[in-house]
Image (tube, rainbow, N blue to C red; front, top):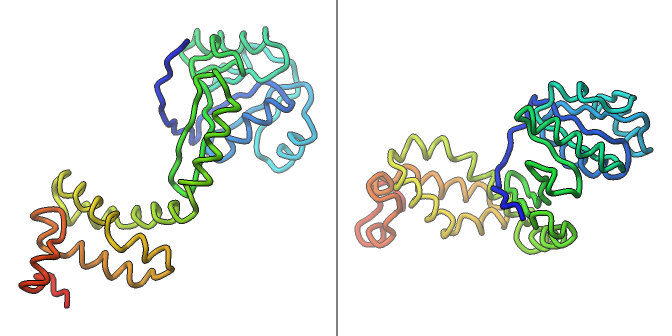
Length: 235
C-alpha cells in the first residue's frame, strides 16, 4: 500500500484537466471549484449537473473523446470516466511527464489522491484512508465538522490572522511569537469573540501587543500587572 505525504497545493491559475462528464467527474469537480484553478473538462457529453456548472462558467468544456494532447498543459490531470483503461492512460500520461495524475478509485494508478476535506473559514483538515475506504474518510470528515471545525473556530482563525502583521512587527523572535499566540488561545479572547464582543476582544489584543513584557517573554505577566501596575498602561 502506498504511503502518502499530506500536502496542500496552491492551484490558483494552474490548469487542471478532468476527463469524464458524469457523476464521478462531478464529485472531483465539486472540490476543485474553490481552488482558483483553471478547469477543463474533456468528455463527449455532460451530466445535467455538469451542464448547469458549465452554463455558470465554472469550467471550460471540450466536447470530445480524450486524447493525450488534451492534457499537455495540465498541472493536474484526473481520469474520472467509467472506463478504467482510459483513467489509467490519463494517469500514465501525467506521470510520464512529471505531472500530477489520478485514476479515480484506482490507487495504484495515482501519484496523488484527493482527500476528504473538512473546512471552516481558513481552517482545513484533510482526511485520507490512503484509498482503503473513502466512505470511512467521509464519515470522519463529518465528525470533525460536527465536533471540532465549528463556524466559531473558523471565525477565530480569521480574527487571529488579521492580527498577524501587527504581532510580527511587535515580537521579533519566533519563540516570542509562539508564546504570544499560545497565550492568546488560552486567554479570554476566544470566548469574547464567541460572545460577539469584538470591541472588547480588540482592546485586549491591543494591550497584549503593546505590552513590553510581550517583547521580552512572549506573554503578559498578569502577576506583575496586578502587583506593580501594567507597564503598557493597563488599568
